[in-house]
Image 1: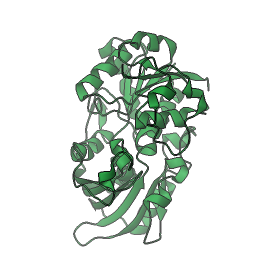
Image 2: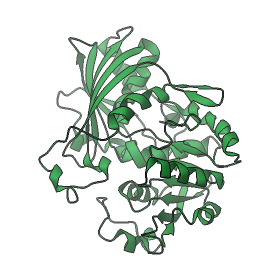
Image 3: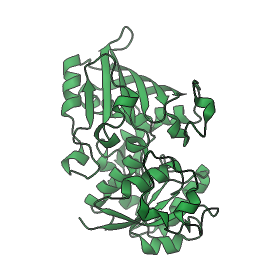
Length: 360
């Protein structure tokens, strides 16, 4: 695999920092551009960060003296110097959509962590193990944008990446009908640490703006089909969600209740989880976990602190599967929200796009 030159747009934020860390020694990707808002532009990465580095290891030295470019004013310069960009900006939905389309129209592919384009009909929203075929819609998107190389691809919301992967392999055989999920989401999902958000210590907030709508609608796009020049979302399963902010640094947990058209045996569900492999595993992509779904037999697992970093934070942990009095089954899932759920998922998507020839 050739080495691709990449940029990080929104490099100073929490997800941008996670991108920087993940890409520091990536075998396929070399970060040659860091970009952020006009407030940071012209400064070195070290100067722009100040005391805002949120990761639990030091900033990689290769970035410290790199000069930050302006994410909005330097689009042409950035597009000319990289093969593609990762985007994790902190702008309004409308501003983000406009910015990402400007990069795409400058013939610079965009792999986005942002939510702005997730429901755009010809933008693939991909979890590489679940719906890799959706990247084929890029040909239609390029026609709309009038580009030869440029396009936008996005990853899904961080919270649903804990529970939807567990449902996906079951749906093909048993048909998932109804899902109730309650998510317990870490503060890093809000771009915060306990130092910056002391109000979250010893506290739970039963509301995360926009999160429940995403948790109910986005899974249906993952299950959707390409029809003509758009991805048409599925109409089932039916999802209802509550999303709660909890005092945890990293790791989103989901408590799931599920009803099937054809109720499976418990042992068959666990076997399917353990044996499930997706396109990311078939291609042996650098960031792909060897085993995507891990099932724990212990009653007190998975635990956020113990299991969020499983397989470099790219695996999904499942546990407490048991029959339910009102639904067929209930179980608990866990995924690292800034690795599998955010930057790591976007890096894995970029690897898939490279392996399938969309970045050449």
